[in-house]
Length: 181
Image (cartoon, rainbow, N blue to C red):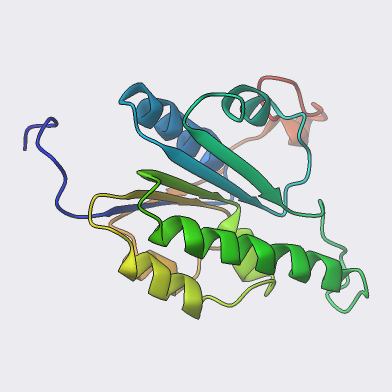
């Protein structure tokens, strides 16, 4: 297939697993899409830090609409009263995601840490699956996060699982600008 031929089918790509690089791969795809003049929507679940490098770079570019729907790290106790704040934020992110998936305004939609939100029961999967399957044939959709549910794996046409073999954290190396944030 010639890459200049218009797409006739939506693409759904999923980056999951415990290794580093899920969001990094997704943002690389965002750069590629912007290079082709595509209009993009980035929705981040769980994350709340607007000082990370990818947001500082991409959110100010023309053609990118960016929004975070997170409250940061989740409490260890799933019954913590704070969890409701995380659920409310994630539900707003889900609503924005469905709108973006169904909107003709975006060629590329990145749902960052979506799998994490799903695996921690912050949002239901059913309305998301319906929106994914109803999105326009020409849309590129990129999903990231650990513990991808089987339903997302089933609808994605490309699934990559990042496997951690070794990580600097294990050696006491702290998060570093340009690498982890």
